[in-house]
Picture (cartoon, rainbow, N blue to C red):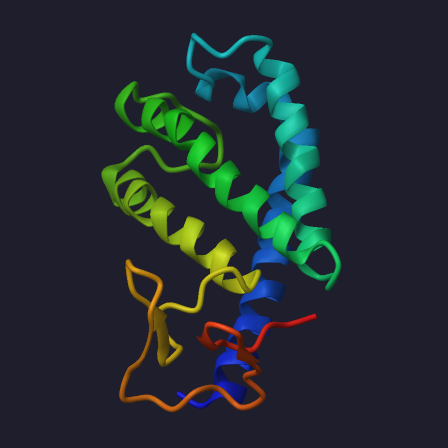
Length: 168
């Protein structure tokens, strides 16, 4: 994949994630009571947590679309995807019925399996990860290696070796 194609894909994913998280955030704000049964019993103030996560999703969506806040938003949305996993597990294994959401494993199985992909998607769209599309990797000892792929166009050299290009 060329550097331009990677960056175009990253931009499209950012727009898609921003739209998805904005919609989900609004749902958290307008259908808070419908989501209460999904909250694990150990979560304090579940209604407040649902409202706060809705606001965080909307803020993360907006942040993904800005150069200044993109990386912070990506980290926040990745952490969000990790933190909601217990609610997803409860939804699946406690057979909690929520109107408008299927109750079958055809829904829950892919949703649970896909959650780590959402973490990766947020981090990649925010420019924090280059895997698997960049040719440059950093080894455990800090030495820089180059794979068969050429470095991305516009990659600036760093004191410790070549680096990947970063978005503003």
